[in-house]
Length: 341
Ligand SMILES: C[S@@+](CC[C@H](N)C(=O)[O-])C[C@H]1O[C@@H](n2cnc3c(N)ncnc32)[C@H](O)[C@@H]1O
Image (cartoon, rainbow, N blue to C red; front, side):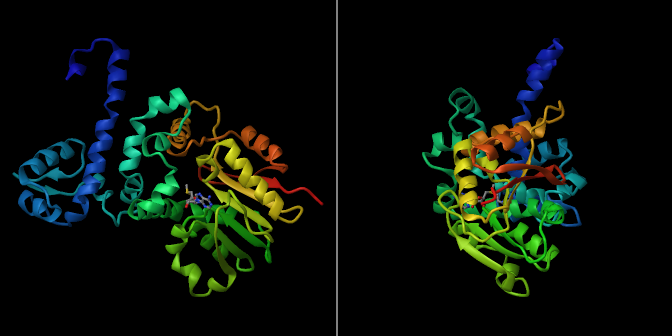
């Protein structure tokens, strides 16, 4: 449309950026309709596809025409479609499971980005502004959204948790208390990687309802304990390592300080608090972390942090900063130590 008549390069670039929402909507709708799962190894007719996904044939035909323009499916003959590598990647059983990650951000996520200007202007979480409640309270009342969120996190976890478990500074015989560990994917990886270690998972009742069955039954069960609770209020004692992965970034500094101070109070002297997060750095190529920083503002009033931000948070919580103790892909293992008695 207007692009064609834009002679100014910067104007054309900024317009192009503003249309990014269309590509997101196209991919999201393809996942919502379940199109990739409805196409097998053989080409499929539009009629069969419309019937399989429960859509009107005429509008689905128009949507398929657009999808093929993005390289998602290819048209082979009139009104017959087959997979391309990109459409295959949207199948529920595809490697790395992008469809599960796309479903993680349900309708609620879509609405939040439309409120970005509000959050930038006010500092208020868009979620709170729109729904009048915290995201986890919302998940309590909307189980399907909560389950899709936890499922999406597990898909991501499958890739990164074994790396975190490998890098975790823990010794045989120690107890790892994981706060806000979702379905327990990371704790499972830790127990599998370190056979002499025991684990406690502190989570909401809802997340514990769908905890990884491998932690409840089988050989890991005797080294695992679930602790339903609110880590902003209290955390269990007796841990040698308090592990918190990709959760502090959801919270503002005051909330993080409450959780870290709970660890300091509950843990024995010299225990480690290991925070696993991606770090904000000054590099110009850090668009992903900078996006995530604003995403956290929208979702829960949180933020991404630099190494220096973490050192300051630990100091304010009465912990000493132990430095970066390891890495797992983009994630860093940032350590704090509880004071000696
Ligand atoms: C962003 S998810 C991270 C989950 C997991 N650590 C991961 O890396 O996949 C945040 C988790 O915090 C849990 N959570 C939120 N508030 C909590 C609280 N007050 N106490 C304990 N867990 C909480 C949620 O249920 C959710 O699983």
